[in-house]
Image (cartoon, rainbow, N blue to C red; front, side, top):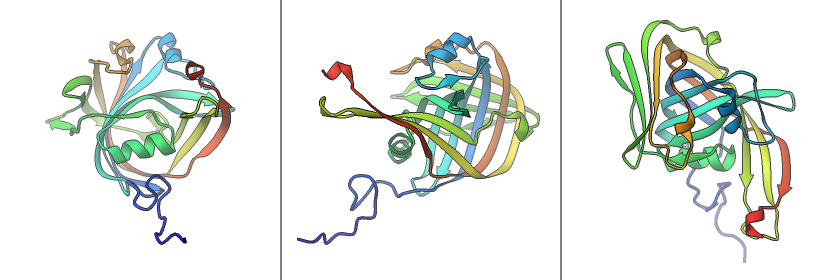
Length: 250
């Protein structure tokens, strides 16, 4: 019997998918970005094979409110990222990321290999010249960041957020069939700056949940920015695609 239904999705269920194919238009990236200097050993702890952590101990704690249709018109997100290298290419790697909507979580996790898990919804809070963001899950505070705006920011001083390198795992439910590991290089295009302010930053790690963010020290804040940007998340490039066996299932 012929298929009577039009398949217009690339994820299950294909006849009525939870989100549409990309590209994904970030119409609002309203964010606090706090730069932390931490021991290099802690950066290595968060760097999966086969990526190489770039020398230095800088990581970025980001909390933002986003609008990225077609998958999510609003979502609250928090992440930790740091610069890595693979096969001559550099980009930001995300060891931890939490997102408040299932659709934004699915897109980042299923397509691009970001280790997204769900968090509670929220909003950045603005009082006078202080901007504050909080990550909560199950009502428990996991991360807080803040920026006191002092001066206009310069985009060139910010971390490079146009190139992202993720390690995507595709598990196999059958121990006889290998799982897959992919190195995914995603890039953003059409970056536009709405506004950017620089100032005094602050961060605090709290309840870690299933993560290990409690290992990240926050006593050395080296920079902080508050801004709003727009860009497009385009199709990614697979830099490596290998099979492997998940030993625990044997």
